Image (cartoon, rainbow, N blue to C red; front, top):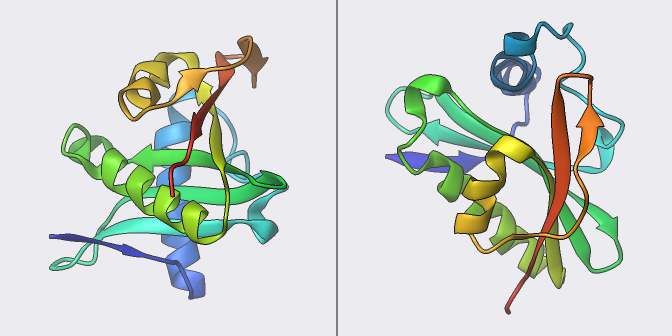
Length: 147
């Protein structure tokens, strides 16, 4: 059984960022540190954690892009736990929190290769793909949140 937790301790954040790096940056040869961005301090961070083993299965973060618009980013699920509903579990948790914060729209700068995942969860492409870190393209996707 998985639960959503917020990293609180130094050890929590270390494991949180390690998973983000392992899934989102290391496969493309990017240096450590690129798994973080300028929005870390103003973001809410979420982890899907196995209740039995305390293993972090996936991570995601949320911040306010502009008034009423939340932005999800850095969604990463450990490769050995992909295709098991962890990504959906994380998206659902973040969207619930966004509604609590009064956001009307949720957005994501998604990798072009991840657009099918977001579309499956109600997002639509609302921008033009742009290069990111020289190895991939990102596209703005969004979804209207119902109360």
